[in-house]
Image (cartoon, protein in one colour):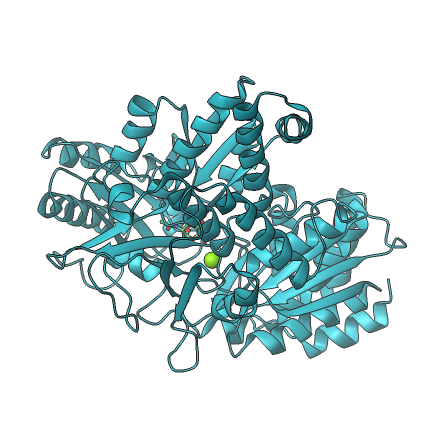
Length: 542
Ligand SMILES: CC(=O)N[C@H]1[C@@H](OP(=O)(O)O)O[C@H](CO)[C@@H](O)[C@@H]1O
Ligand SMILES: [Mg+2]
C-alpha cells in the first residue's frame, strides 16, 4: 500500500468531524455534501473487495428515490448481487475511521478478509443524474487508484445497468456483452422474440406512458427506443429537462401517496408507469372512467409474472420449484391470492432487496418483489440449462413453445437485480401474450386499503424487530400496544420498523376501509412517538 498516496488523497477527501454513517439497506445515503469522504473510501473498499474475490466489482453513485440534494453509494458484487453482508461492516468501519487511522483500518480489513494487496483490482463505476454525482464519482476514482486498481467509468447509467455490466464482465460474456448496446440488444431481442409468439402481434399498437422521475431512466429509455419494435409506443414524461429529480413524481411518490405523478397527463384507462430515480423500481397505474386512481404495485406485478410463469412451467412438466418472496409491506390480499388462488408458496423476509434476492435463490424459479416495485425473477442454473435444452431438443410442440417463452423470459429479465426497464418489458410482453388490459390485470384481486407513515424519533435503533420485521421486540410495551390497536379493526394488520435509508421509523397499517387503515396507522404512529422517543410535535391525524 502506498501510504504516502493514501495520506495525500484522504486529506483531499476529509471526513467532517463527528459524522457517523452506516452502510444501510441500500448502501450509504445522506446529504450530498457529507459524502465526499465516504465515496472516496468506498473506492478504496471496492478495490479491496475486487482483490479479495479476484473479480470486477461495481460501484454506483445514487440516492435512488431520495431528494435531488441527497446522494449515496452502493457496491455491486461479482455476479451483480448486492455487496455481501460480511463486508457491510467493513464499509461502515472505513467510512467512519479517523483520517490518521485509515491505513490501520485497511490493514485490519485485509487481515480479516484475507485480502492480498498485491493482487489486481478492477472496478466498474456508474452514476445517476444528480448534480453532485459527477464529482462524487471522481472521488470514487481517487480511492480506487490509491490502491492501484483499474476502473471503467460507465458514466450515466441506471443502477440495474451497472449490475448487468458487472455480471457480464465476471461471466466472461456469458450473461451478455458488458456495454450499453449489449444490454439494449439482449433485452430488445428477447422482448421481440416473446411478443412474436403473441397472436395479436402486428395488428395492434401498444401505448405506454412512462414517468421517468426526471432521472437517468429517461436518458437510457431514449437511447433504447430505436431498439424497440414499432408496435410498442413508449411516451416518456418527466425526462429531467424541466423539473427536479423525484420531485412530485417517480415510483416512490406514486406508491407512497397513492396518486398520479405530476407532469403526466393521464386519460381514462390509459396504461401508465413510473420509474424511480435510478430506474430499479417500477409501478403501474391507470385512472378509470370515473376518475378513480388505481395503483398496480410490486405485489400485483409479482402476481402477474407468477401467473404467467406458472402456466408455462405446467406446460414444460419439469417439476420446477417456484415460489414468491415478499416483505411485510406486501398487501395482505396479494399474499392471500398467491397462496390460496394461485397456490404458489409465499415467503416473507426482511425489507431490502438483498434479503429477497437471497431467499429467491433457493428455488428453481424465485419471483421476488417489494411492494414498492423493486423486484425480479431468478432462475436456478439447473432450470435454465434444462429450459434451453428443451428449446433445442423437445419434439412436442406445445412443450417446446412453452420452453421457448421461458427462455426468452430468462433473457429479458435482469436476474442481477430489480430493473424498471427490464420489468416493464416483461410486463408489456405478458399483457400482450395474455391479451390482458390494465383493468383486467388490476382486477385479479383488490388491495386492502393501507397507509404508510413515518415518525421521527431521537434514536430509531431503540426499535428492534423479529419475525421478518412484523413484530417489535423493543421498546417494551410497543408490540402489546400495536396488538391492542389492531384488534379494533377488521382485516387489519400493522407493524413498525426503523428505516434503513432514512432517519425515521416507518409505520404500516392495513384494514377493511381506507378510513380505518388511516386511523390505525395514525394510532400506531402515536404509540411509536410516545414509547420510542418521538421528536418534535406528535403526529397529526391524516
Ligand atoms: C417501505 C419501503 O418502501 N422501504 C424501502 C426503503 O427502505 P427502508 O429501510 O424502509 O428505508 O428503501 C430501500 C432501498 O431502496 C427499499 O429496499 C425498501 O423497500
Ligand atoms: Mg432505486
